[in-house]
Length: 80
Image 1 (tube, rainbow, N blue to C red):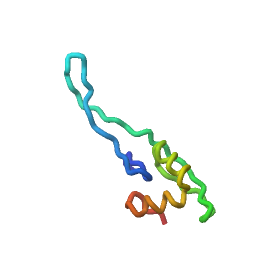
Image 2 (spheres, rainbow, N blue to C red):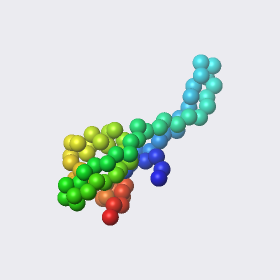
Image 3 (spheres, rainbow, N blue to C red):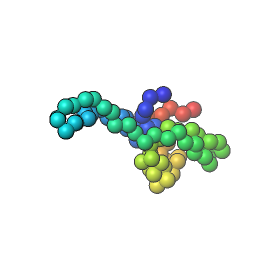
Image 4 (cartoon, one colour):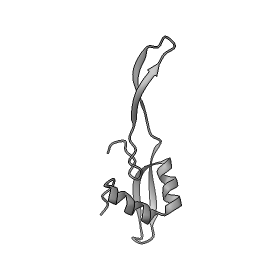
């Protein structure tokens, strides 16, 4: 799977390293992605997601079920 958050949909960004002499080389700004298991109370099982730390905060705030429902509507995940 690619480096994309399954909750927020964020991807890595590409930019430039700028040296003191203004020489520019390409670099990427990676996400703080973690593979984390969340307990789903309604399904009585663990759900493994690849989420950023911001995605984890969203899950804590809104709850797992509501956040998964929103992510499915946006087309970010397709859990069975």
